[in-house]
Length: 162
Image (cartoon, rainbow, N blue to C red; front, side, top):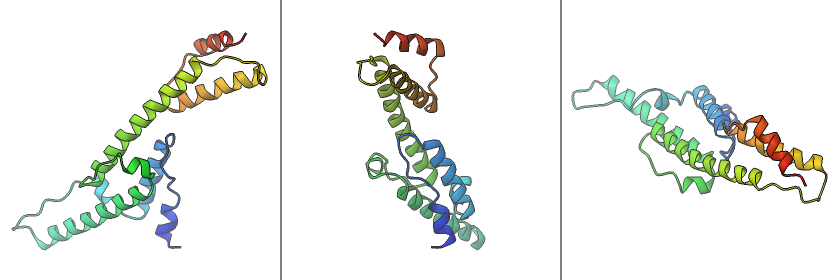
């Protein structure tokens, strides 16, 4: 396996709860592979009077943009690819992925909130397991940048018990 291939293999597949890690790992891999030019700089504008150097800069940027987009597409799941429109630049593509992720994240937050609000101890398992399950859901919400007040969570957890 090439060094570039091993660098990219460190980028996880984007899922509902790992956008921040995915983005950080993607940025590092693209930087180390020297492909982040398309993320750092806008597309160069070339006219009929442009110099050879300016034309070469555009070609280098196009190559980096194409490779970045290809690597991003490879690290997102099929169901998300269908939700992301084809974009001309990597920065547009990344912004669209972020928007789609935020929609997925909102749905996940709503689902977790509904699970917490509808949690009732049904006698299966122990009270400790029930409390840990609610704590786990609250932690997932915190990981999604949704903070629940601890007093509210304690009060609600106690009310979910018989």
